[in-house]
Length: 161
Length: 191
Image 1: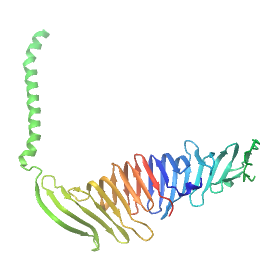
Image 2 (image 1 turned 90 degrees about the vertical axis):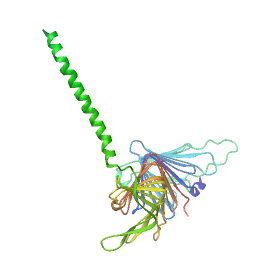
Image 3 (image 1 turned 90 degrees about the horizontal axis):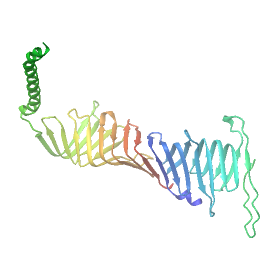
Image 4 (image 1 turned 180 degrees about the vertical axis):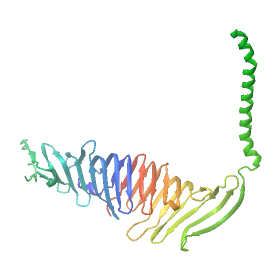
């Protein structure tokens, strides 16, 4: 949801290591990040901050994939995603799902090595092979919406191959 | 045959047990004696009230400052107790770090200070960085080793963020700070 942007970011974990000079914070063990309806769970989260606060988080899945979920604006629907790593930039509102990435929203599902989800525009873009991790293909399943009487036409989904 | 031998040995065994018993008793009494014979209980040998002290480094630069309502030194274990202490560590080019609490204990060599009850540490603001504040009920400070640690609940507040944890160790002048025991952080809305 757009309102998420204006909410504080909460992070919980087993341990935390702060490097005061570099202004970095590494959370480890059962890491849970929440910001409004946005939820992210990981084994490790590297947080960067500046004077205004939280700027970005790089989440790593060591024992299990990183999981991400956020509610869509003005409708009861969630976008969910997993990846070996998920980067969340709170300034640009961009979420990058990296490595065996999968994103699901209602009937749509997309897989790839790199999926870039724009939380502001609520659109996503899948990139087949991320340069570093070898060949990969994008597989997108976008089922046409069933024409129920009186439902608003489905919004165009920005899934570009 | 064995019956007679047994009878012959019995007094010797009894005597040995008695000897061991008295040796043990003597040892126990000795330990207690050791403390009493010096005749010192945990009584102060000097008290200083409402003071401010400054320590300098080899180049004559101030290193630490200590203020307190009362300093009580104890002869028997050479420890010092401080009431309402305010300890400040200063270093060239670095923001001063001050720690205050209700009371503190200082080891004989002066290297370790244990702050207790309503401990409040503040590192002053610098250009571009707000102050850092820490609150807890117990903080072990080793000034010359630039080390602070606590195994009690601790809260650290900095511009826009608030960290709560069950323990903390901070080491180095540009500290690396490790929190443990269930960490909960909040980063306020970006300004």
